[in-house]
Length: 135
Image (cartoon, rainbow, N blue to C red; front, side, top):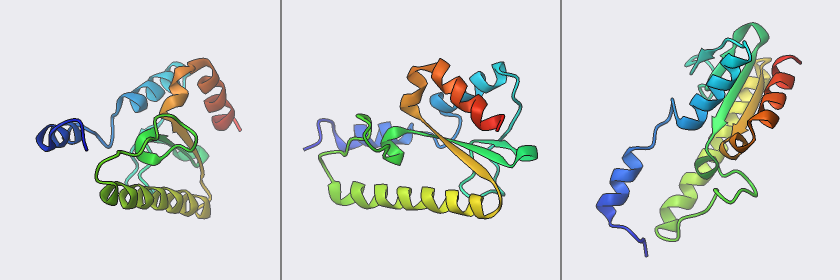
């Protein structure tokens, strides 16, 4: 049984954004401070990557661990109620993410997924981003 009412859960879920999320904004701020310039949410690319570096044909997705099911992450929990709703929803998200990455690769693009939990250590993340973009 859910700990909160259906109305409260609906209100909370309506606050979840698809772009300009806090993790995405932190990655953008980090990249900007590292002197990297990018475009946002390219609608013409599969999956609408959060950050796009067109001249390098590189894209970065900033994924929330819960929504995109980060394997082995404590944030990727499955709600105890309405599992018949959540499990197919998560499966569809994983399938869509994989298709987007495959399509980008087929177009000659490289893609990097940054997980929400990786924002705990910004120094390690900065090293990973620099290695990806300077490759």
